[in-house]
Length: 495
Image 1: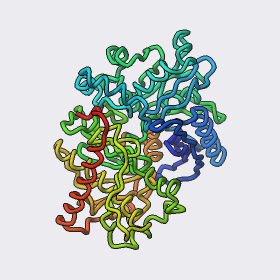
Image 2: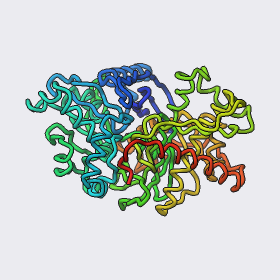
Image 3: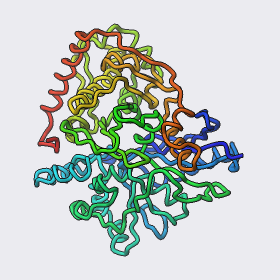
Image 4: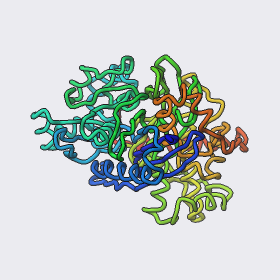
């Protein structure tokens, strides 16, 4: 009996596979951490072969646990914008995977903005000229790595984001494809028609012959034999769009915010492309031709990793809740975790992190609390930008590993003044991929039906602080942000 859906979730810090039943319950899972390298300041790389091999290993382990005969379909979801180059004949990578957080092409983006391309690129793609996106990464790989350049000359080069890389592996090299949610994050797709744009390809120096086909997010792409009997891959979506589906946000105005490696707030905008006046992004939603408004913050959970791995203030992320609750306040300390620049709404790739307000009374608990409070402060930056663009969520659906922390969820409510709705399954990226696969094979008519069957609310966190307290906190945060921006060397592509 085929009663399960398998999600392959290739994230930034780990890859995992999860088998869900029709009620959204997890029946089996497997997970492997990924190794991230920082060969130079601002550079962030991973091993593309490791991403592929560990994703297939995790999926294979889950299929072995539940039995291939029970898996109806597979849904793929992935870290977006990460750029990979490989040889389409050998199937092997030609260089490192350049991760979405990588800043090495900041000068390229700055030069293009200086030459006046910012507005035309934004109108076509819904994005900003920033090294966050894939196009300048692809260009860097071609210009700087001889194997990539040689493969391009020989017509053997394949470029893609992580979804394309996994589809290529799952199809034994027969399918080189992506979907609109991932393609819309490259700076190369015309958002209005889901097609590669020739002018943008020329601008960034990316050959169309090396790019994948853009196929619908929902529907069978290939029947993979990687795990034994053929199983249809019936959905592909970038992680944030998958999470939007996993939260059941399928109507205009419904919003979710994911707290993982970074922080990503998406609000469904329906059948018209949203055009932000406040430095937010326009992006495609999985499924029918619909769009969302997005705010992307580069550092969320990575700030907690910094506390653990670099400062040694905690042994595990789980300790942060008790430490934050052990003091009445952060004691005036503000942490701005701009470790890899500032994303929305600032878009300053050259910004760097800041800790301010330290006194002799500052201890471990205050630093930990201030770091967690940065999540709410950054979220409120996004909420204010959304409101300025006419989008006013009445509640915020949250997910990601960080929101298992009750203290953090309450602080998000206090920082934003919104009800924070936490689902029973906080890792909704994988759940969303499974739901989309269920739609792809006809289990459900659409996302609302899938959400009704597979999602449940765990808890609602309501604001407890006064507006006066909230505004006082905002003033301290804005002062710290002003210090960060004042320290930026050179003008980034932010206007």
